[in-house]
Amino acid sequence: MDLRQLTDRFTVSPQIDVAHLHEIAGAGFRSILCNRPDGEEPGQCDYDSIAEAARAEGLEVCWIPVSGGVFSPQAIEEFRTALAEMPGPILAYCRSGTRCTMLWALSQHGVMADQEIALRAAKAGYDVSGLLSRLRTR
Image (tube, rainbow, N blue to C red):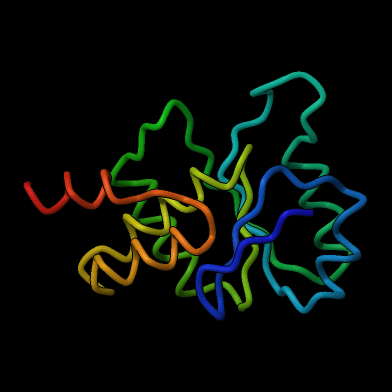
């Protein structure tokens, strides 16, 4: 697995599989947050399978699927609520981890300094500077 920590409570990852859930729970994660819609590509493990295996490992799960780079205000608010209410640490996944990172950045804009958001994302290998720049010009 390719786990990339953004904060002490929040880590992102590319697509996980049912076989990873025991290792994820063993690493101390308490929640799984999926930002990937089912059926995005052939062979992708569906959310229900992940959720069932995660619950069997004692993990809390949440599904906020987004696609096409469209981050609706509702999805951002649901994400913000999940971060606040789910037990941490939380592992969020999508195809590459980028969507999760973008949602995290959007949810933290105005809460955390944009420079800190960009720095944390960059350390994890994601560039959110363009997104933050657009938010500042609104």
